[in-house]
Length: 222
Length: 114
Image (cartoon, rainbow over all chains, first blue to last red; front, side, top):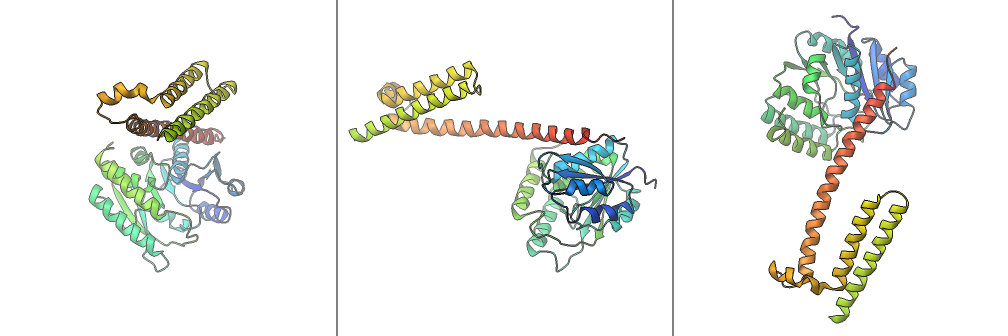
């Protein structure tokens, strides 16, 4: 597969500790990297530029969903055919990218799941299990890990799943749109490092996600 | 009872006066247009009249089946609060969406690819 039209989109908020490492590792597999600095108060944007990534800066913090959407919009406007979304906190290993690219030959969207591990916080494990079952019940999309943000999709698929949520519920909105649009999807296992337990999806986010999914199923059809 | 009613009337009038002053202040700071100033001052004057002469509401109170003017004011107050909350929610959501669009577009346009 031609790699010049593959873009990696990395939303980042106060990630000066890990952004250089994430970009450095991603560069080995993808030449087009866009970092969306979501109103960081640290050196995330400067470090991103130093590493040679395109840095788009939100002047205020909008949330992961909005940041990822900015990056994906930028990539598609610059003729991206495939997009790989990954987190900036070094939780995702960019060395998994070739496996995503391989799957994109056959599927519209490639989801990933974190292998069950004792290191995964119990609340997160339970939340994931619960949300996965709700997603399966409401949308018929069977995924092991609905909140894992390491994903890849084609430009055409992005147009169909382009989410409205500006926060973490974008992960679930994307899945619900995948189900509604009957896109071809697959999931692959990835290894994960849990770096900061105070970042990512919280219990409140989880409740919001479940309520949103019910809403999208009942009312907000596309 | 008389003392309490008087207390409420005084508090209501003082509150109304303060809000008139605050509305005028906003007009002077050019936050309000003259139309908005007239609307808000009229609203606070009506509020003060009702606070001072609650008996004016009696015909309405009896017609809608309340026993006291205070009951009518309390229920009306709740209606206004709910309507106000709803209106504020709509405005906030609208602003939030507009801010998101502006911030995202600024980020993309601020970094056009060479």
